Amino acid sequence: MPYGISDSQSDCAGWATVKQNSDGSYDTIACHDIKQDAIDQMVAVSLSEGLDPIGDVNKRAEGENEALIVDIDGTLLGAGTEPMQDVIDAVNGSGYEVYLITGRDESRRAETEQALSDAGVMYKDLIMQPEDSTDTSEFKKQAATELVNSGVLIDAAVDNDQANLDAYASIGIEGYTPEAFVADQAEDVVEEEQPMIEDNGSERSASSVYAGADMNSTVQWVSDTLDERRSVAYTTLEMRASEDGNIFTGYAAIFDSPSEPMPFVEYVRKGAFAKTLKDGADVRLLIDHEGVPLARTKSGTLMLEEDERGLRVEASLDPMNPDAQRVISAMRRGDLSQMSFAFRTIKDAFSADGMVRELREVQLFDVSVVTYPAYEDTIAELRRSQPVTVVPSGSLLARQRQIQIARHR
Image 1 (tube, rainbow, N blue to C red):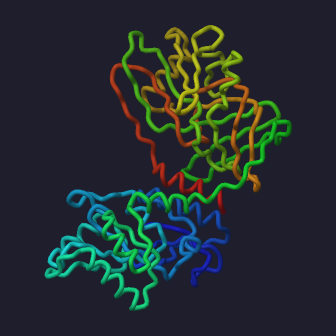
Image 2: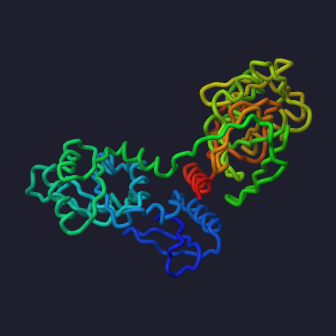
Image 3: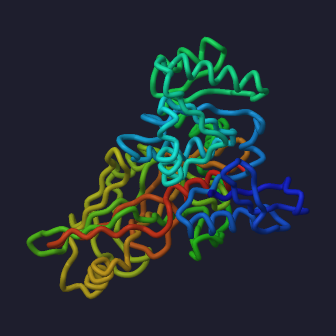
């Protein structure tokens, strides 16, 4: 079951890290004096069990006594017993008491309960269609009416069949298709962004370092008047064939990917590199922003472009260069898989509370292969003979949820 945080547990004076039970209640697993410690533990235990953290359960339970009606076939489970994971995650994390009303007849209860358990679906009650009933929409309408009459406050219903949604609507229950419900919950998780306040880059903070407390990693963030650096974590690493085996490609920045809190969360917007590239910036490919260049735009050995994804890098590495050999070896082993870019801010914008920053135009100095990440998405690859995929540790979705929690706390 998923983990969250709460400041309302009766057995904790401060913030508690909690585990959600199948009936929607929460058990305290540890108490903390400060909220961040509870967040850190929530993320750690969620990652260790491959779960997505659910954040502040007090905020999520805005309608604590409200209920959600959810269908099964085509909504929670696809063909056979295949879990529809995005819908299951949205339902489990919604904070509602969940009542499953299904057109499956009562004779299938045992197999249905097993399938729901295997898929990790959390619910309060399973209401199945009587064997002698033939009209599924009418059955679901009647079942929902009985719940309302018993005092259950139903907020909405999720069903993949429009006839069923129409039946719920006839008794005043708002209906969602599975896709619409997932989208609606995503909007709830990522709160509405505050208006951005544009800055021309004339004022910058002094140099500082941000050390990430999660995932046992240290993330360096450097910012001063002239030079800033952002490191980017990988999603995959591949090696593909080429004649001489020394063509390096990667992304030094990914558009609209959230950085880790530092303390604000930062996004690089599409077009941020357009002018600096058009103006012919003399950019180097370095290792950790230092040393002799591996390649350079001025010499034609480094090519940079903005595409739909981000800042794409392609470089021809000299096999006689010892530093290039170090990079090639580290990438083959999977030890080196991140990129970074160093820049001067020309135009940016902050949210009114200063917690979200957008980079809108930068002057680019270098792109580098690096050790530590500050953003969640990039690709660095060396074209070799056999494709190799390296899966990053931890859950990217869990990582994004942690960023969202830190962003809005």
